[in-house]
Structures are given as C-alpha cells and as structure tokens.
Image 1: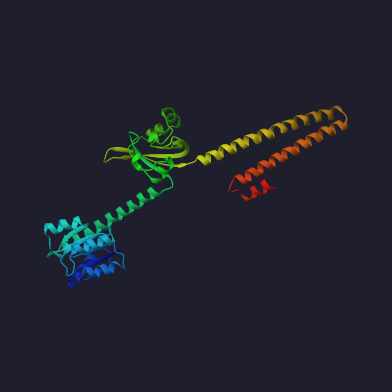
Image 2: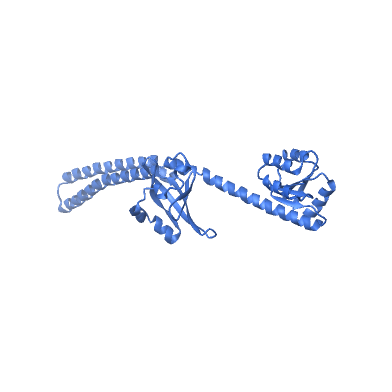
Length: 334
C-alpha cells in the first residue's frame, strides 16, 4: 500500500480524489488543505508520493515543491492543477516534479492519469533508490572493484581498489590500462588464462600479482565477469579482488615448515627401519643378545626423538590455526 499526501485547498477535491484513486490502487491518503499544513505532516510522516495543487493560499505548488525538495529530494511529487500553462509545467519539472496532471471535467480520465503518474513516479524513484544503494554498496565494499572495456581501459574503481594500489585520486586511474593494476605482461596473462578464459567462458577466477603505484607488488585473488551491453553494443568487464599477500606468506611458511618437518622425520624413520631389519637378521643368526639389546636401545632413543619432533609439529599446527575441531585439538596437544 502506498502512503500518499494530497494537498489542495478545496476539501471536495480531496474527497473526490480519495474515492477515485482507491478504485485504481491500494492507497492510504493523508489530506492537507495548505502547503504549510503539508510541510508539518512531512516533518512527522514518511510518504511514498505527494500530490499537490498549484494555486493555494500562503504558498503555491511550486514554492511548496522547492521546500519539499529541501526535506526529501527523492519523494515523487506530482502537480495536480487546473492551471495547465506551459510556464507552470516547465517550472514544475525544472524544480524536480515527477509529473503534471491537469484537472478537468472528466474525473475518470484525470484520475486514471493521476494513478498512472503515481505508479510511474514511485517505481522510478524506487529503482533510483535501489540503484543508489547498490552503487553505495560497491563503493564502500572491502573488496577492490573495477570495470574496464574491450580496450582494457578502466572506467570505474571503488575506494578499496584505490587504497589497495596506493592511489590518491580516481583521476589517476580512470582511463588507464587495467594491466597497470596487475603484474600481468603478455606471458603472465597467458599463463594465468585471464584473457583467454574471459574470451571463451566470459569469466575468470584466479590469482595474480597486483601492482601498487610505487611499483611494489602484492598477491590478489581475482574474479572477473564479462558484461554485454546490447543496447550500447559494448562489452565491459567487472572485476572484484582481495589482497591475499599475508595468506600466501602464511601458506609458504607452513609449506616450508611441513617440508622441514618431513625431512626431520623421514631420516630417523628410515634409520629405525634399517636397524630393525638388521636386528631381525641378528635374531635369525643367533647373535649375542647384548648386542641386540644395545641396537634396540639406540632405536628406542631414535623413536623418542621422532615423538619429540612430532610434538613440536603438533604445537605449531595448534598455534597456527584459529579453528581446530576439539577431537583434533585433544590429539595434537596430548
């Protein structure tokens, strides 16, 4: 249901308008007999649309429109007047009116048109509001976001992208080549599959090196999608990415640690295996039990060292991850 404020100095007009409009749509209508009264209602209520006469005491419709736009620049405002002079209509639209319906002798026709104007204006304002919210969401996103065209020329970047690359103003970036954002010469791009995948599949998801204004590099996870504007017969590419430099560092550090741990475990385990084989041979050949005992004690010491190395690895794993299931945590820390 749309909440409408209707302003007219003639009560009978408001009554007739309320009766007819409710035939065409679901409306809750507040009435005001002057612009002053309407402004007071606006200070306490929110409306989906305002319908106002032009000729009113104290303040005419255009002056009222100017005051409304100071309070709410986006609420649909329709002039509903018996004055259809071209100057009035022109001024109304110049000051931000969304529609103009002239009063006449045919109520059915004029209220059908008024309902149509309300419907168009409210849908347009809703679409504009939704678009503004989406634009705002993109602008304040923590992800770097950009758009570029078929010539790889950047047409848009958000604040996060500016910050990631160390630029101060968008003028430094808009109109530049997207490859200035990434360490992506022809060979690197070919290896990453960026442009080939965009061309063949219309999307790309992968990792590249980002380039800062000062020439330094950082790791990014990047997604790009191809957008076809059939009306303008143009192609755009919409990209979103995040800085994964710290994540990549952590991955490399963990890989180095695991590799070193594997080396520290592999050699003593191989040594134990070899010596146990020799011990079995000594048992089979009936050699001295004292010599066998000494050999097994050496293996026990080596096994203890392996357990110690595993405990160090477990502690590193426990401290290196924020979330570990309880069952795993008990095993790693016991």
